[in-house]
Each structure stands twice: as structure tokens, then as C-alpha cells.
Amino acid sequence: MGFGFNLFGFPLLILATVGLLIYFFATKKKIALKLLAGLWAVTICIFCLGLFLENFRRPISLTKQVIFGEYRIDTTFYPGINSKWQYEHFKFTITPEDSLTFYLTRKDTIFKTYTYKLKYSSGLPDLWSVVNDTAYKLLKHPPILYRGHKKFYYVIRSDNYGNMFFRKQK
Image 1 (spheres, helix red, strand yellow):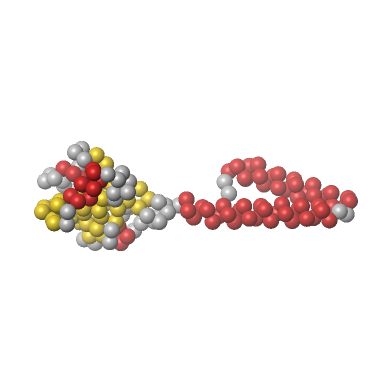
Image 2 (image 1 turned 180 degrees about the vertical axis):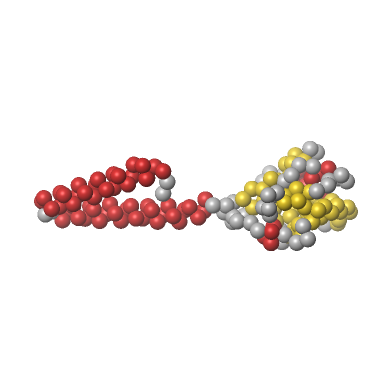
């Protein structure tokens, strides 16, 4: 539930419970038991809702097998001419052999490919960089991974094209 509930909520809940029980035994009024049951029902509902919502705050867990595949520019980040142009000219594939093939394209026609050996950071499959990028400087900066609850994407910073947002297609 969080630090705020533990520090303030739990002692207040216990105090309210003891107070309502004392009130019930002193007066024998059933309203005290109804309030107590309602208080605990609300507390349990809030606790369960917190546990449920906690699952949506955790980012997706990635393995090497999950990141294998083809990546294209996601034009929904910044729709317009620049993202459409990037979509028509760049894509890459990550393979199980720890290699990355970067494609320069014109619409659907590939006119140049660059293949790189990948180096993973600290054994994490979601953080990688290319070993040698001497032929083509687009991958000069390591990609940055952003993970949501169910999706993830890479941002590659390019000196010539700005940030390029790649999302897995296949």
C-alpha cells in the first residue's frame, strides 16, 4: 500500500477498531458493529485495489528471446513528415546470434545493410550496444530502452536525424 498507509493508516485503523468495539460493548448498539464492518471492508478493498494496480506500475520483463525481431520507426510518437521519412528509410533486426542488421531502405526496398555484433551491458538483454560502428555512424550512441506495462521501444539518438523511436514489429 505504501509508506503513507503504514505510518498513519494502520495505527488509525487499529484505534478506530478499538474505539468502535469499546463503544459497542458499552452501549450494545449494533451501529458500531456495522461501522466496524464497513471500515474493514473499505480497508480490504483499498488494499486489494492497491495490489491489483501495483501490477500495472511494473514494467515489462524482457529476455533475449523477447527482443529478437524486426524493429521499425513508430510514427505515433511524433506523426508527420519526419517520422514518415524515417519509417521509409530505417529499420533493424536483432537476431538470436547476438547480431544486429541495420537496413537503409527506400520505402520497402533495401539498398544498404550493416551488420553488427551486439554487446550486452551487465548481462541484461534489454541494454545493448554495437561492438564496432565504423562504417555507419547512426548507432554511435547506445539505444535507450523504455518499458511500459505491456510494450517497450528503443530510442536511438542520431546526430543527423534526432531521436528515432523504434518499436518491435515481428
